Amino acid sequence: MIDDLYSARILTLAANMPRTGRLDAPHGSGHRVAKLCGSTATVDVVLDGAGRVADYAQAVKACALGQAAAAVLGEHVIGAAGDEIEEARDDMLGMLKSGGDGPQGRFADLRMLKQVADYPARHASALVAVEAALDAVRAAERARLSGAA
Image (tube, rainbow, N blue to C red; front, side, top):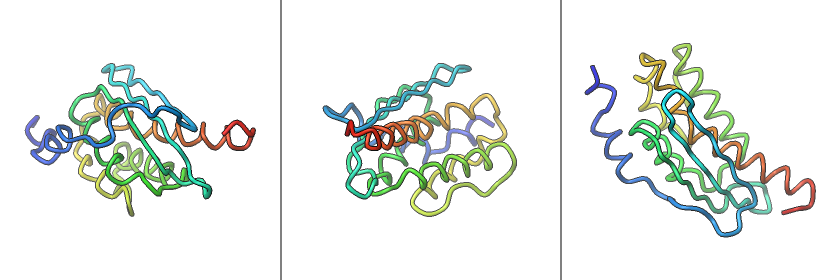
């Protein structure tokens, strides 16, 4: 049962998470904590002139599921708009909570976490980096609108 949850692919991704650390001058940052398990993700972003992610860094302390999701983000987030990240988050929620297919497009690799649906206590950990990334982009967008970025 647990072997199905922590597949070789998930463990490999978790061990090779790209874009770790923090940015020196982010346009926006997001921080999320999965209260049930204590997984955390802090994400920094820089947006380009079109409002897409131009630079990204993440500090993630999570189980292999949360780290694997963060690895997918780190691999595919450059060039993404906030709406794409929001759609991926919503599709992940649907996949985990109501049997949806999961994210498509640049974040389709998050579908590898589909089996987490059977483990509700792990949902928040699988989502923590995605939600922190969305928070960071939305913070950067708000800063841009207020003239701070």
